[in-house]
Image (cartoon, rainbow, N blue to C red; front, side, top):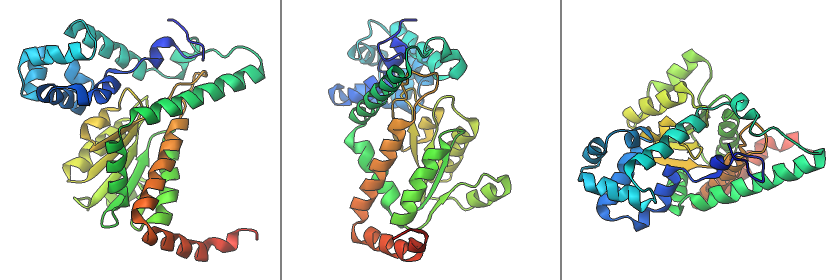
Length: 295
């Protein structure tokens, strides 16, 4: 596998089919956009099915599916499917599988520079790839005080859920983390409905409980905002808003740096939308909390 100058494998840095699809939405014809939505709704499985079946999902003709693939730059549908299969292999890999390709080399100062460069590129590329519509939709859902917001994440990404929850608690009422205790979690899920928003975090390797949770609450009418990586968690099939961020890193471990920045952007957006109500809540919060801090 070829390397790159920041230490991550070259194919890790290539845009995924999902990224290419999202960035090309404005260039597609109306029929091609139907193919794009069908692919993203069941990504990547829909693209690994036959041309006829994908066309059926999208409600278009088979030639439209083939034109869609060519519009993305693939010579034929088999080439697009080969790209999707390569993504599947990358998105299911863990740190040990990536270790040899990303084995750190050089002095400590060189490693610091490599890490800093990689983080900066991942953050910049991630924010450029996310459309304003997706940011606005995520902010609108999380800022709406008539809705209850529940947050949950995976083995590592739960820290992002906790980070966003700390912000939202200060900006709006009815915000909670999904409890890790099974009985309490069941109690939290019993009365989920259309006034609920679930903000979920799922990065490779994806977790069954997060994917199942997305499907379950969406079936009850809740809205789902998903933070994930460029390969898209299967939970994306059940999400109203999908916010993918890069995870490239010179180390064997994926980076959540871009995810943290995106959480801060969403929090800033909620503050802007809620305006005076949010700032008053922050003042009230400080009046209860200020005793903890030194003058």
